[in-house]
Length: 401
Ligand code: BGC
Image (tube, rainbow, N blue to C red):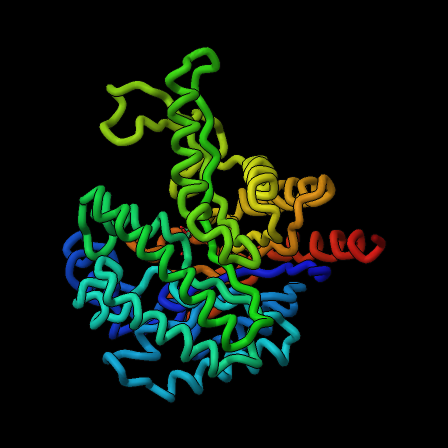
């Protein structure tokens, strides 16, 4: 993989709007509504405005874009394919191609068709075939249009939020079930990999994996060390180990730096606290750009596969932090690359502001601002221009090599 991909990402549910037939639509309009959290509704109206968004991406120097194809829209009722939706995605591919932007296509980004969720979703082994059928449909329909495929976005985050912390649908809290989901998702990925390769052996297939830096809080406390090692193994490598023979590349989503302290007074979960540093995002997540370097080196050492950053970004509504984060993250990415990591792209999260799951619209992750009260109008944030200039700078360096 010689070309380096610079771009940004989005996911269908978070930007397209009107995802009526998904499990999230129902969840938002019942559970979240009771908590006074807004529903996704029209989201950013990307369904109607994708051409404008891709044009902006092009102007910002992006040569690639990550997006998801929404299963709940393609198959709103079991076995019934909505061909208007397929036609819509054809236009999406055409528009990307017109702008010379390479698509990175995600097949599952957290949301499920409601009919599938009602059947027990990935809790039941016999349900997996439904998702596999959908993968085959997308693989054969867009055989020529796409090359890079992410089967599943962040399996660990999905299993954790949906089956441990009750934060996301179906709001369960069952450790054994959580483990079962991860096993089923790993089986699903492996089979989807085989099926998609049978359709087109040139497809490059991976997952987008949320990995985190776990650091012992106290240098001389062995328990802190043991715990952070344990989290690192389980969270960062448990799933990847299960699919190591079935991935052409690894997609790394990097957001979190965790300080691990074995202090059982802190909380009954995982005893994690964060360092009290000055840089925090609007969601109070600690920012540690060097972490991307540490995780890249770790992934390269273990799996020796090409890696792409499939997500990295900050909720930063004032755009004060984003510029530095992009600068520093790219610095660390290219340092890792110079030291031999087979890194072939950086896709910032996200292209535009979007619907941040159970936090609603207030967290602003976009390189481009969306004005939800003014016809969804788009405004390029200053940090997006900084990213554009960095793309030019790094591209020049790459061209010289
Ligand atoms: C998800 C995105 C989300 C982002 C920020 C990732 O876990 O893939 O959908 O918007 O993090 O929370």
